[in-house]
Length: 204
Image 1 (spheres, rainbow, N blue to C red):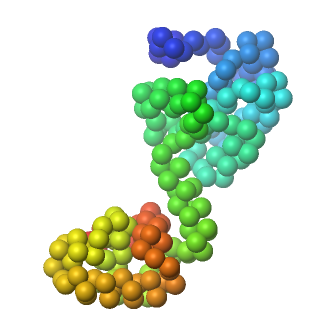
Image 2 (tube, rainbow, N blue to C red; image 1 turned 180 degrees about the horizontal axis):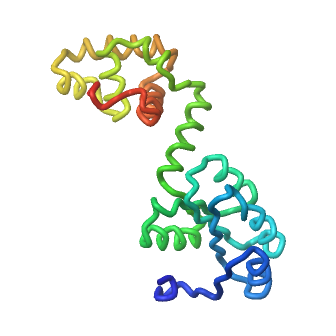
């Protein structure tokens, strides 16, 4: 199916690491798709070999392994993409491959969200756990979720049928209890709590 695309030419397909190294050396492709499944990372060392042959080659990992650790290792070795098979449609794969030509990374969105959320949590030292969340009342948890949407105090007051001043007081309490500086940090913290499953939709 890739060969049917006017801007993509498949110049080879191999079944084992040894053949892959030879093919990359001889064919000099712009992009190499590497399939990695169980055992985890069994073909990861291929990225090193490909980069030795051509430091400019773009290596994209295709895998069923939804692993942050494996993804980080792949990028550390020089990969330009990490796509989860069951999360990536054919059209999404095409878009990712074409994005490489624009200098973009090919990355499964769900995994990218998890990694970015973890980075933000570490950056702001915001542990997303039940203990931290338990500092907030149910009403404050409701407002915290709305803060993650980036809406105003007035909009929140309309959603919860309370006064704008009451919302403002709750926001101040949330920031104080969680040791946050502003609404933006509170929204990031809420996103991480929701992603972790600690803050549920029922609190809306």
